[in-house]
View 1 (cartoon, rainbow, N blue to C red):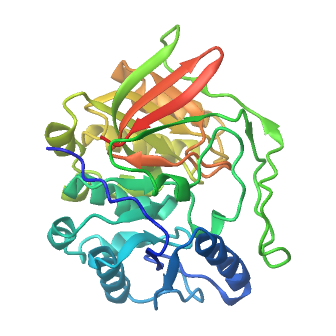
View 2 (tube, rainbow, N blue to C red):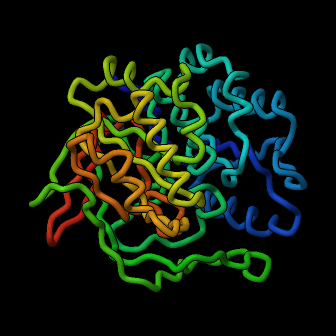
Length: 343
């Protein structure tokens, strides 16, 4: 079976905004408006859904959020669905979505990361539809550093095309901008130098290819062992060449991440991995275990390259990844790149 890629967006297409998890509080509506304007400036019509309330940890009831998300995914007039950001409990939508109906519809780009991994990763695994793990809508006004693309660049690519992203070698110290003061802020403020780090015992260069799949550890670990995170089945159906699996930690301490990664491994998440890519994190170490050591403790026995500090986590900047794309990861003394092909 082949991966289903949504058709590329063109000026005049419609982009839907909904909050399958957390909505936007009134004090941050200025940032939402600024982000919408960036998308509109690319020539798209933006449709903002009803599930956007930010007064609680969820934007609406689970039924309402699932219905709006599914309606946008199956509406042939909507070409991309983008949340403002992640949140906490998108997992309550997973069993409410009619995944067969979504799989039968024309593919639509779904963009997001963090708690959105709870939805986009099952969408790729269950339907073979490519999804885009990258910056959420509220991050869209930020200017990308050299070497990285915006999700807006990727959704405009034709099926069969390819693109390369390289590490900018810089990242941002932990902390959030005050969007109430500057809702249109564009400068990411990358103030630290940082390269990718190899964690496994291997030596020499890394040059590995496979189908890409992965997401946030804290959200995906709760789906491990369920039909919604059947990575083994996806690999058998779509990835005879094997997988490149990526994971990233948001905020849990090293011991919790270690336990979660062990659980995901025991449930087959890494069985077909040719390599593991680990996002840079500001999550805390434990007194007796670092975040690096958590990964090695859980995944070191896989016998594949493990490359950490990649720009695919909760630390700015974000390197958008296409779940399902044929992906080559290259890491040498002078080159750190992810090459993706929409084939």
